[in-house]
Image (spheres, helix red, strand yellow):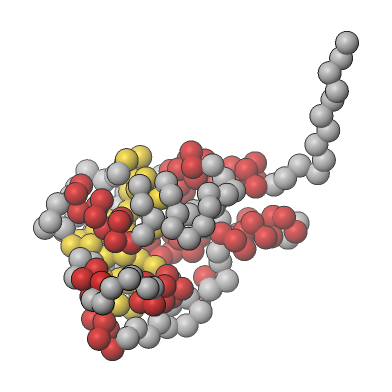
Length: 211
């Protein structure tokens, strides 16, 4: 785990917000701010390797720079690169850094919670073992998540305004590509950088060599 920003105070409960942040959006910040009602610090965790997709779009360094700009005025937020992209891998890295006496809570949306609960871990009991290491705060995006009854205690509800239901990094990229308004979907501090990174040039002409 490599930190790019973190508060001086050590938390008793750490909130972990993993993501591709391609780019960071106002919904990411809304989830993190809502999470502060339940945790002492929110860690924005950017994996160096994703388990479900390739690294496309903004390079890793640009994503870190956008996060740093977006979170500059948020003293309870931290930023770190993590080696693995699975929740259990991220939890292991956080446990090694923060210690065994810090409780871990992942902040996520309904889609991520469904993946966690429905993933084939290859052996019985793997999900239960994992949920002994951390719990989840699931944001109400596109409706509430209903976990399996046996794991209900590990999936807690995180209230989020419905205004953020449509906000996603993919929607930002789609709007930029289509020429639609997108600026309201990202923090003001990163709008210029998002414009530079994601807006493709109208044409690119390579001059032939002279001589």
